[in-house]
Amino acid sequence: MAYVTLEIEVRDGIGRIWLNRPEIRNAFNETAIAELAKAFAGMGSDPAVRVVVLGGRGSAFSAGGDLNWMKKMAGFSFDENYTDALGLADMLHTIATLPKPTVARVHGPAYAGGMGLVAACDIAVAAEEAEFCLSEVKLGLVPATISPYVLAAMGERAARRYFLTAERFSAAEAHRIGFVHALTPAAGIDDAVAEICRELLSGGPAAHAATKELIQAVAGAPLTPELLADTARRIATARATPEGQEGVSAFLEKRRPAWLPGKKS
Image 1 (tube, one colour):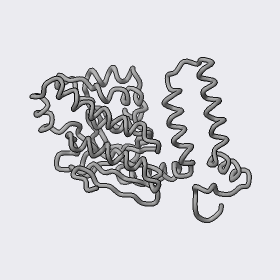
Image 2 (cartoon, one colour):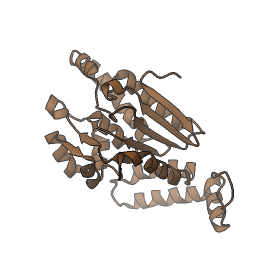
Image 3 (cartoon, helix red, strand yellow):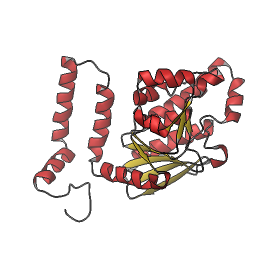
Image 4 (cartoon, one colour):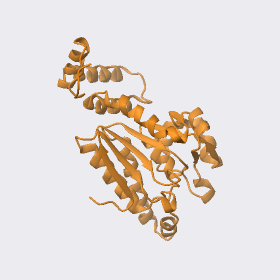
């Protein structure tokens, strides 16, 4: 489909989704939210896509909500606001639960909902010049729909500071608190993302999907007999799959697994 707010590329197993509203620093509205949900869902079901990278055109990754969209929401009823917010919540959930690895390429400012997009991705790479801010309380709002993902990414203690102060913080600080995984000079961000994608492409597609489900099931869960049984079931299931059997056989035979086409190692 043709997108109004996004630019889409698929090449060599990598799907790239670019926020493409540089004139307003990739701020998003209801159209962008719907298109992001559709684009990620499409990448999730496309067998040609193994990894999805989210980036932004122009000077910013995403400045959060579009001011015109926010002005319109100010006149909404509670029910209209709830429906609108649920669209954003569903979009972030689509990204977070995609059965494929996702990488956020953060080259510039990521504010408010833009931080939600970063946190919903599995891996975040930031340029040293990138800047972050959870600005909601300074507008009399709360970072509600993004909170499950941002809290998981930075931890409760850091969230208490940055949710409440709404201060801007650097990429170095985002890295220190665990919100981003890797820092790089701006000129090297594409190389850094490419290196992570190469590592991701070496994994089995079904194993990636199962591992993402595993993380969601285990993170924060109490260590009970039921959890131990569940993890045992998951590895037993993986061992019996064609991909699991192929991966182990390839390792033992010192060859490339079938999901890595090309010359033998």
